[in-house]
Length: 346
Image 1 (cartoon, one colour):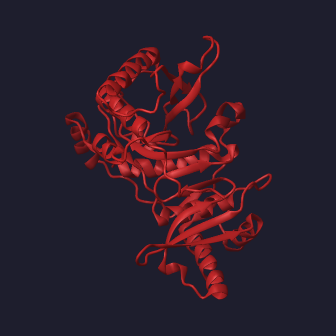
Image 2: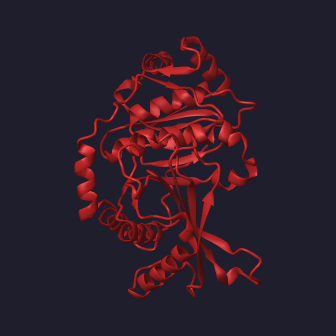
Image 3: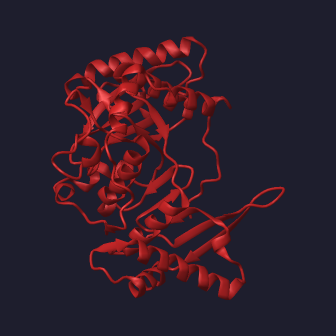
């Protein structure tokens, strides 16, 4: 069972406020961009979506190459387009970001990068992490501890990881000029203080801004349906839902675990559209779960709030935390998250 209750280790309690301050303020250029976006009509939430599949592009990639992205808890953010970003300048970006982190450390900000601050910043591409050929290449940023390096040929301990991607992001790609690189989905693993500092550097360097990407109960329901619909070679986890009941003096959580084969059988009983998931099917799937729970426990889950969904494909929490478990559906999971990020950017 995934746990989202334990807070991330952060040296300062004001980390969250810094994140908000650093990631939400729009620069003058971004304000001009926003005025252009307001004139563009964005497609509303579609009444149907395709069941996630393994894309052809992903099939050409060695699964081990992306294995380090699985089974980690990632915090989600949406990101506006990067201005004058270049994949050929990764070495220069690494040096500049390394120096920026050092400068922030000297200001007195607590950065969890080792006592001697002996770190190395690495930018690298994630080739194959895309939905179509038109999507920009995903890229990875890592902070490593050089104090763990006995030689130049061995990597140090990874202290922080973040990656930027765009999976089937056509709706956003069509709205900006070639001076901008659209990578609307950002995922981070590590201390919030590091995420804030690195986000600040990106904002100042590429005239962009970040926003935390929460997942509401409506979208969690879609995730539950789409991921339950995925064909699995073998199930790795129980299908589980977590609802929050608002009450005083503290909220009450209700956990509902289902055998994954039973969840799939329930889905198959309501699923009528081959290869697709419709809004009607999502509603019916969730209503069946509510009815079954009420029949046994006399509790109306429809009066509560869905806050977490866990399946063998992935698990997601309303506070914007996700853990991807299955390489086969990695692109499918990221495609839906990209859609949510693009919708938030508008």
